Image (cartoon, rainbow, N blue to C red; front, side):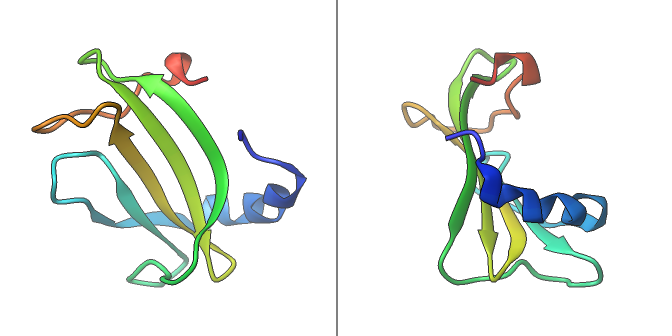
Length: 96
């Protein structure tokens, strides 16, 4: 899934989104918050977009944009298959 019509309501949040935390396992997953919030929202997740790509290190990854409580909340990036150690965000041109 690469984002459907229901995702359009989140577009205005893009100008207010900021990173409030990063994952500690070595993956480049980031927690997002809107405006002055200091923490991401929690609870059930709505998947807004789901892609696969390749990092500069040549690692195949999945990328999922999550919303919770009506707000952008997380950009999840995970290796396929699982990788020990750190890796980067995928190259944008590799996303499919």
